Image (cartoon, rainbow, N blue to C red; front, side, top):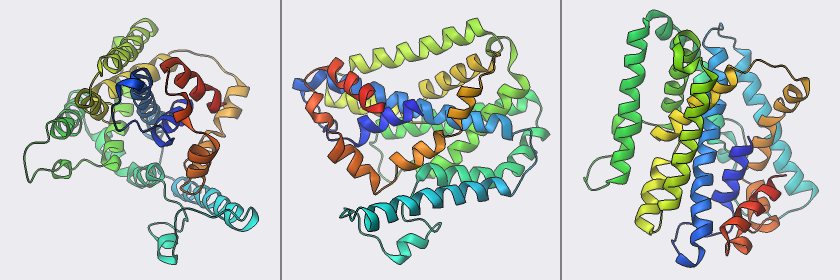
Length: 308
């Protein structure tokens, strides 16, 4: 969640990172890495949930509780801002907008995709349990080629008319299915490398260093945009690094009640700071990242400070 929040600082705040300006080159390179860092957090978040779900029976309460929790925060934030603080909300809302697809004032792409994954859980588990190790690995490899390499290639080299990533079945929801299969493979057949703290630590560090190097090399608009496209949730480096980081901590056997207690509040943090009505107030009015873009280090430190 730390990674996701600091990514939103980079993505939503007032710094116009979409236009490459050499005056702010340091901040742009830091911004690019924070994009990677946030997408990494998303993949790890999904893998953690899928790792435990892949060997559990379907329970209708899971998606319903997730929807009810999201409704509580979404309606609570909207009512508090609109009717208690009397804030003039920048986003218009209608009854139709509240009712679809779930009865929420604010939409959350992550919640939508995760809820669908929860409902698909029993069918995903049937696929996992019916496949041998080699066939499950073949399925994962095929989907990575299709939804990672091929999709990103189409985005980076967008020069063929009439071609869309939708043609290959890629959405954030279907990609969560791929992460689900990966988490199940790690749990059932992880093998020597993923069961080693040494190898998973090396893999994690290498993945992070690759992201740093790629961000450092982004010295033009074209390179910045191209690297940014590979830093999405389906980017090969993002997927590999998330698996290594998750596997490293899976191999670290310790228990801490404080960490477990704090972890229980993480989803609430996401629902608060990514709310459509709270987001402009947080990132445009309370926090203005463009004040810190004259130095890459200052831009990064401001993000870390605001994160807390």
